[in-house]
Amino acid sequence: MEDRRKSIWQRLGLEGLAYPVPDHANTLAYSLGGITLGGMIILIVSGVLLTLYYNPSPDLANGSIRFLMTSTATGRLLRGIHFWTAQVVMLTLLLHLARVFFTGSYRAPRRATWWVGVLLLAIAVGQYFTGTVIKWDQEGWEALGHATEIGSEFGPLGAPLTPGFASNAPLLTRVYAIHISLIPLLLAILIAIHLVLIKKHELSPRPGQEQVPEKTIPFTQHLTRLFGYGLIVLGLVTILSILLPPGLGPSPVEGIELSKPAWVFLPLVPVEDKLGVLGIPLGAGLIFLGLILTPFLDRAPSNAYRPRAWLLAFGTVVMLALIGLGVYAIYAPQVSHLGM
Amino acid sequence: MSKMLAGLIAVLLVLAVSTPALAHGAGEEEFSKSAAVNLRLAYALLQVHMDDEAMERIEAAASAPEQDGIDLAEVEAARQALDSGQTQQALDDIRAALAAAGLLAPDNGQTAQPGQVFLDKLAVKYTGRPWELSALVVAVLMVAGGLGILYRTRVTAEAGLKGGVTVGR
Image (cartoon, rainbow over all chains, first blue to last red; front, side, top):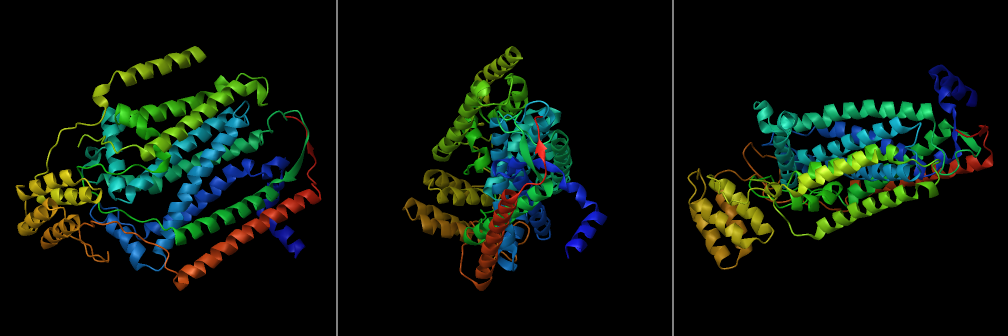
């Protein structure tokens, strides 16, 4: 049996996957990126199945999701798995970002890996946003209303986000096309580059352990562990989908703003309350600018915590401020932002 | 680099605080010409207890130039119900007014036609049906299987790492 397994592995060239990686690759903190990738695979599979039932016409989109949830055998479960996995992926993605920041893994020679990761985060947020829109309830319409208004402020650059860009195709249909084709394609390409860069530069050492010898494990063992994490995620999102299935709001109606955005966007709500819809690109732009510049701001001689204390303190303050803004947004009174 | 960053942040902050006109949308109240749109707005406003704004929308619906098929008697009934504080009755009357024009999708969500709308949230919950219980069991087994794999890989790693030693980077 063992010989047969080895023979199959040899013929498929999978033996090459057994290259050595540091022992700490198997810790939860250093597995967050892999868990995120596993979640994305669940999203692709469940998303492909959901496309079989979804109608991206503004008149019928909301109804098609209701049909899926009420008249098909597994539609409610399927949508629940897609919804909850999206929440898990965003959470693990942000935790992965925090881990890389705090352990100094963005430092040379891994700067390009960090920048590709930041780009991946931006695109993943875009994917989450388009997913919010295409459920086409009041929250979805208001989210699209924000994108349209921001897009109209950016001239030709924002034109694809406005209805006038292609008057023969509804904006919702275009957003759906972006959600299922353009963004997944970009994600796949960037993830491939991210993985190649990780392989080339190896997993970053633990803080302050750059010159310390460490035992290694075969990468295949790390993959096995990631499979275990993936099973746990799939099991948990399935449990959540059954016990707390996501509902669906009424058909959207223009001319009113009643909802608050999904949790990922909540920290930007107080900024928008203060500055209007342009506060969203301004706030998000500052966050991403800070992330892009992080490797340049870190001049410490090593990745140990102490030499990077000021940067870690600054990052912690920013992170706590964003969490605080998000919590404030939950309880703050509803403010209308769209010029309807 | 840090000076450049500080300069850029300063420019962005100045830009942000010097554009009060960007804040909070237009602010001017404009009512739709469509009675149906006004009624849907009224319905949404009533659900978040914005009764005064809902009343404005119901009155706008009653005098809207586009009233195709809307039952105006039900619109008036909704106005009177809201005026006397009967929110639920007002909601029912709005539904009836829209249903008369064929704009309301059936409750079961199976036969909606273009132009028909759903006014209420579709709330779903755990009902304990056999398929739900079966799926729960499978999900728990997946979690248990995942935990088992994590335990096994940890034991394997602790039993003896064969990959050699990595020195520095």
